Length: 506
Image (cartoon, rainbow, N blue to C red; front, side, top):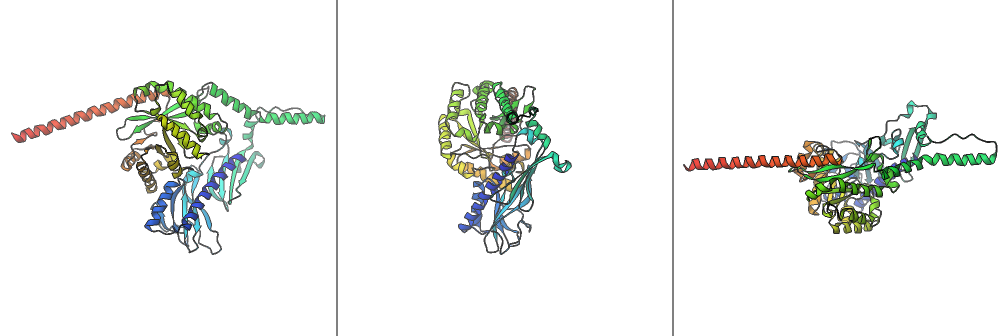
């Protein structure tokens, strides 16, 4: 529970520190107004720093004077009034929320009765850390200053339980007035120690020490067993690929798919990656699991990809894959003699988790690109990398996160951000894919903005290989039928035009 609190504190500290540094730099560089020139700089910084939704200027009363992207100012107070003895940095919360987290507003006092401010996307702090057994029970809160709630997730209510049946851990920040509180029923601990045996105490002090040592060892045993269970699941092939189609939203033809991992337990239950992926990455199992995903994908959809050389197969990698060249050797050995060519492979690296060695990561990506593999930056606009990843890693494709797609048809801010991403991708010669598309209105808006590739539940959920192969065949048949009808309509129109011309000539 303490580790879960530390994760929340760390992400909050990182978001605040990054934003304060940005505002300080604007102040130092004299970018402190609502002028058109300064607004251009604000726009560039928003694109560069995915965690920031908006930048603007507030007056002494705490009202927005201007903001980019443009939105209704409406005289709303977002900051407390300026105080002569007040701190340079101010932090507050906005009404906008996402997955239990609220958008934060961070300000920098310019000492002229105005303040620069930046609005931080709630996705930065919206997270659900911790093991599955505890995540099912606990409540996690992150509070700022005098009990101002920033993040709140979980349904457990400690007020309904007696104090002796509640476990609670508070983790405080050493940098900012932040407190993370993780609360869970004491019964959740029974899962961890369910195999702990009760040992009768003996009068002998030496034996008592022995029993204490045994008790401590047994109390750690479930973690070891959990790891053994995970290794057994890998060996038994319980981790399987599901395939989510990526569509051309202009022609409605299939462009390929993203390979997504699922855990199929022996009883047939399908476990989503959110419940095991962090454990797999932290314990190093992800490398074997990724190799297994690639091998199984070759077996399951290799024939389909051999028959459709334009299809792309996207494989998710995490930051640890880019610490050495092993992933290059894996891709070579698995795909070199398969029906899936290197040119059909796309590896996705998420922006949510930082790359420890950017230079090493760039070399590995360049080596993959030399084979013909393309590099996609996933979750763009939600994580650490921002413009630095695009500039230094030389990615080929950017994927717009679902967070921006959800409100693209109703929120001008999301539209502006997506439009900036599209323009950036076009200028840098990169492809662009929208994730999490669920509504027809979103497709229409994406087409207006120049996005032509997307994936999401509107088209299909992730599915096992046999269903994906059927989906591919059905999609191609529907595309051929649309082409046939379009050709017939064009021929009929041409015939009608020729007949009209003939009548006019007669």
